Image (cartoon, rainbow, N blue to C red; front, top):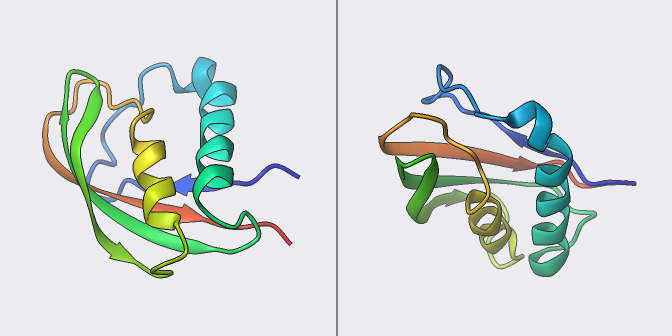
Length: 103
């Protein structure tokens, strides 16, 4: 069963994720890989990142909240952020990332 990730963009709700439909499968593959490399795929967690958006990508990300410290979800979220398309959004933003886990 594939792991799911929800990226809830409360602050950036108006951002259109460029190419998300065509890149959906490859993005999910990246999410799965990041999760398998850094955390237990059966556990759930929420991580909030604060990043700088520019040039269609995120940079200078740091973890500002993590519901499962010490379990690797912070590293998994940072890994996912490297591939998260941001469209034309620029500036400092917070990205909530929810790992739902699998049962």
